[in-house]
Image (cartoon, rainbow, N blue to C red; front, side, top):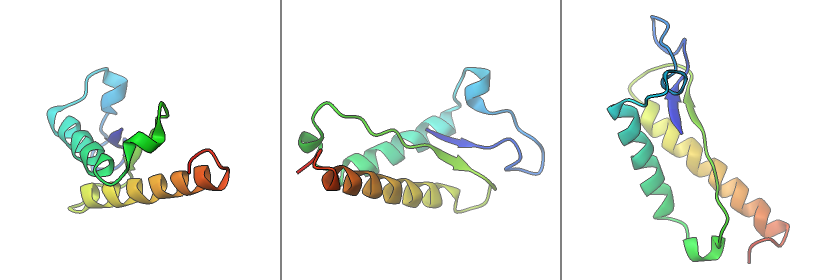
Length: 90
């Protein structure tokens, strides 16, 4: 999930999830992050497992999408590393 926190911009914005409807831009960013992360993981090794990653923007700026993608990748790598260490993945 990708979203900007309420005070990420100069004017307080309402979280899209709170409104119950995700905007087109947010939806496309979520899809981009999902596609990018799925492309670097052997999904057959995960089996029926799911990994949920939240990408919250603290301050809106030009690089928020890049930062979200990088942060999500690091979080996913750490989660997979832990699963291997716990012998839940080979």
